[in-house]
Image (cartoon, rainbow, N blue to C red; front, top):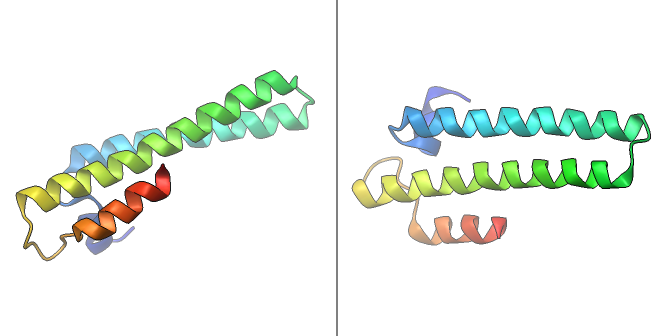
Amino acid sequence: MDDAATLAAFGHDPEAKRKVVNRLKRAHGQLAAVINAVENDAHCRDVVQQLAAVSKALDRAGFLVISTALRECLTDPDGADATQPEELEKLFLSLA
């Protein structure tokens, strides 16, 4: 992600960016565990539990991205990187 895209996604909030990256890395590790479990014929319960964990981690990362954009929109509604409320609503609903 280049600097302009980073600003568009996270405004001026490096802490939010750090949290999203951490959640995505966690999901990445969990997905690797799911793949490993399937390859090793793990019990379906274990596979489904890992899939649920991956899904939750991705959802939380998405909601954090949206909440960061909402905060940025509220604090600087006329900013060059501001996302329109209607677009944020559509993004939010796409995760629900």
